[in-house]
Length: 392
Image (tube, rainbow, N blue to C red; front, side, top):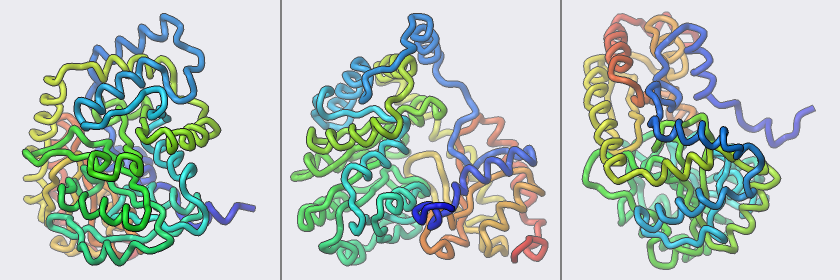
């Protein structure tokens, strides 16, 4: 009774692990949602917007004030000039941005290149449009890619490439050289670039965040996607945005209109306030996550994992084989039940899934006390025995 398009992928493993964590009252270091409050000024702005009756539909592609704030942010931070009237679409989260973008630009039979490990939505997004995903490996410890492998993935059927920088789940920040090669291949094969930059402000070194849309020849063939969820700790508000040429934006707006009509109006009004925060907010944001990384990663080392230190975002990939485990899903399930800590099986970020069966992703967007509690529980992992895990 189901359409074929929904029979070729499973439900979200990330959300599944959250449900399992809740059932066992485990500390959730799986799904990327903070357990600390959003800035008070943003919450107050949302309450005020509701009280002032911004409670009906906004313009489908975004409240004017938020689009103007996005345009100013893109100019100042990303180096991208964009007209808020013709080049910006506000969606229900960056997740909808990617789906609307793909529905607007991809036809059945097209191919879409995806770096893996990948955010788990990208593969299903491609399949829902009738496209064929082609995967290119990011390899540890630095999570770079092989230029020859990327060249081999491009062909006459390539319609687009998806890149996520800083990357979820690896934390890799794509370099200028890497982005330049992607840009060169996109132009050679007349392909688009879908740049998911949702973690753009969360970086742990002087390595800059670069938007591929600023590279020569890429302005009109890039859709830059970002949002407010990660930057302002408001993942439940579902505010994302696409920035693209007027031609691409016209199609994205059509798809968005019939997917969701529009994002919540009062939250968009508050979002404009959020995007007007001073530079000191972003400096503090980055420093706060750097401290969390420095607090949490030693616990992972002490627990016995091989740890791949992230350059950005708030996730860390670890190898579970030093602990004697080889099945990521069974390992995470046992960890939730017996240790009381949740993570995400690495296989959910790969195709075929077996390629990631030795990896697990933890997230550290949590209060210090939460990370300390999780870290202390993880020290009991060495006492677990793989033979006790179902499926191993």
